[in-house]
Amino acid sequence: MTRAVRVHHVGGPQALVYEAVDLPAPAQGEVRIKQHAIGLNFIDVYYRSGLYKASATPFIVGNEAAGEVVSVGPGVTDFHPGDRVAYYFDLGGYATERNIPADKLVKLPDHITYEQGAVLMLKGLTVWYLLHKTFKVEHGHRVLIHAAAGGIGLLACQWAKALGANVIGTVGSKAKADLALANGCDHVILYNEEDFVSRVKQISRNELCDVVYDGVGKTTFPGSLSCLRPRGSFVSFGNASGPVPPFALAELGRRGSLFATRPKLNDYVATRSELLEGADTLFAAVINGRLHVQINHAYALKDAAKAQTDLEGRRTTGAIILKP
Image: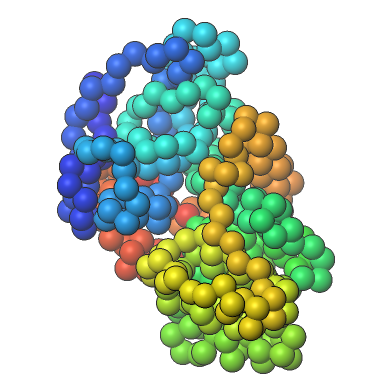
């Protein structure tokens, strides 16, 4: 028996129910983990609200965590009880223990804490593929990162700056602006007080940006497109304010032969070798000091509803963890 946060009927934060659940023994190729820290992300809100559809109800929310192997199922040879591990995987993360396929786990280096591991697997790997695979950020690029003081935003600002980019971030408050500036942003725009398109044009002297990383969605589109130079890339990877509405492809041509993509992490870590490449690159960036993991909020697992309420209300900065 373990305890988990489940959704029986999609809806608001009250849909999150902390309760006892049965957990079978690990099946063929599976590992059981005692979870030490669980990452909280906007995708958790999407599933809870019904924006993203779970395959069945009730379901356990959550996609990333870190912990300790307590037992292994038949056929598992690469992991043993006591191993420190982390993962990004399907729903099931908001739990004290869970079973997971061994090929979805990575071992945590000694210098990476459980708390860091719990927020690096989804957020960190997302930043890895966005900056290294979807649009390869290089020295001299000008990049715009929306929600620059969020869990993904702070990592993206740091890594983009380390790659030599000129980084512009948008945030919702002066406190968040200070945080973004301390984490790699060269310029910060307070979107509640300024028109971010006009400010980008001013900052760039009308040269605009090579790429916009947009995890906000509805409220920042189509302004994000207006911030791009000809042949620039619009990378829409989240829907914090709601989905981007349908638009005519001709709009991309009208604005200068722009590129637009809606990537997701699963397609960039679809194979074991891709997962390990991403994790190795990510952990190395943390160990060598390129990335500093900001965990600014921790909640008890039983208080997941409060944590999601604060996340949706823009009352958080950096990464958020749940502690079982």
